Image (spheres, rainbow, N blue to C red):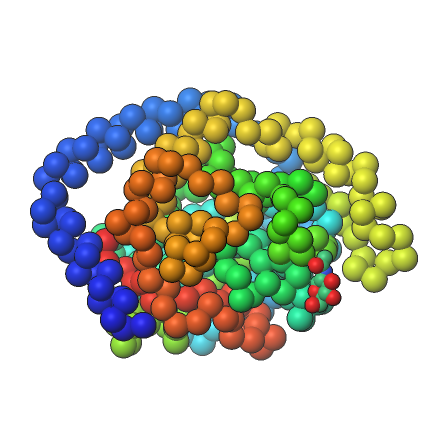
Length: 360
Ligand SMILES: *[C@@H]1O[C@H](CO)[C@@H](O)[C@H](O)[C@H]1NC(C)=O
């Protein structure tokens, strides 16, 4: 594991040393270009109806560190030296659009993990489904990174991580992060830019999430595993760390996981209306924005990690330009295990972050 991590750092260092200046100019140009494209894609905002916090969510842990706004439309999750905090939707949903405006904690946030995800791990321990946005804390001045991932039917040995940087500073203002989950596809959005789509294929089998899930949002101390030799522990000198969530949107089919009528019957109509929503369709303009995002900001995808998956998993759409880009990075080493520590106690998502923050 260590060798691989060092190997990656060496590689990146070499890369930036040899082509640093050209890279800077080129990326600046690309950045301007891509901002233009994102703005086009962003011009038509989704028409969304926000739900007041108490109508659809409840505290999950660290209640004292969950602070509602007076109007009930926003909530702050705090992490201090005593506890993190989190909330969960009051219902489970069979498919849906899960979305929030989020502002991440600023300044020095190394070791802090903010997660916005759907899961049913508390209901189906061995066969859980999950869709993740996971934001990793940050040494001040470095760009934030985040990861998306999915599991279906307990496929925890087959992680499907993708990692990217953002085209903005997520601590400066609110941005909308959304997860769309329909019977046929999954789309992760940031604002109105689709950043990842997974189209269900028969070959995926149970790996495509299929059982009702709750929405979770958490902030917690990820020092124990975010650390490489204790380098990125949470520094409580900077506490409390505050993640803000507002304009929460939850469009989906609420179900009881043990109800008699199977969810796919009970939710058939709701599924159809979900699939007719604006955000369920990736228009050509959005697709082009997605391609640009992935070209410029994504720095790891399991689909191109040939060491981990000699044959890409069935849902992978190999795009030649992406593949070329990943050919020499090949693998940003995740190291260690993808296995999650038990969430039963911490109720927190676990991601491995041994490709640490200094390697880019
Ligand atoms: C999910 O996993 C369980 C237990 O491993 C298995 O029996 C079941 O067939 C799987 N379901 C699907 C849809 O793959």
